[in-house]
Length: 401
Image (cartoon, rainbow, N blue to C red; front, side):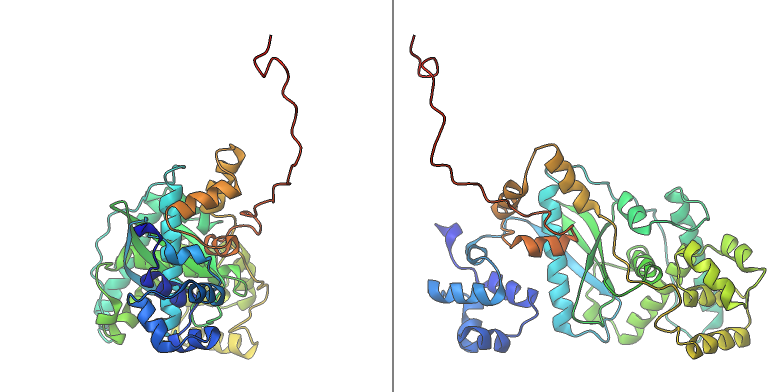
């Protein structure tokens, strides 16, 4: 059957998913780099080699023999660390988020996810960092957009207690990931699923504290609202990308620390670092982000800002501030969807994995749990006991009178 043939594009995706070059995979399989390249481009390996490749990449053998039945399309991915992260690392994470999009499409057949709820905004911005008037106008523009988002989502000017939940309630899918590449902080991606836009935000977790992860999520929200999603980032200059990063940072500050309420909060002790330490837990922001915001809002002078940042460096707080602890996302929208399906006995781990497999998402449960940021063993399939005896049928069941 055509549906049961080896597919080279799936070999390439699995290899990139694991972050391996052809040379590295060749070293793990004793298959030449040239042969692997040929397999990725249409040649058919024998089954022993398929099994060797599957073992090396830690994918089920069936994965390489299936057609991908999920029709999703990703145009661009915004990485916070585009200039420093390797192209291989970025590609691996982008492919993982594409898998998340496919699983979202499958689950959408069974549950109603929140619809995308974003206000319509117009953003002109300015890439000229030396034009003070243009930069001031852009800042006012960003402040207005941040306020518009809060108003659209019916948020007051208080601290946001759970930004992950806020994003998910408004149709933005959030997931966490652990990456070996420390240069990747967070990224966002727009995927066309069944003709509609779905935005995904992925944040690195396991080391970063809550304030930094909240800022990462708000930063990605800035990209979603302010920047185009139909052009390749490879086609823009480093300067333009740097400008977009700066704009997303400004949005994150304005959104998390609203001008009116935050200024009122800090007016008593704007230069006291101990006071910012007190505010840190309430606003779910790092001290450095709040000091930066205070300077941005002209609550402190240039000299005061520079002095406070030197004090932060002197105390060793640049990387680790007081009260920092690794933060993990709460159960996300995928965990909620799967819990609902299991609790209603609509599906169980085994039938859910079969449903994924039906659409070509054939992966080991551990990989899917990691991709979706699920609780450990959510998809664990309990072995069925082998029964060699059965209940006798009664005479009535046999149809006898």
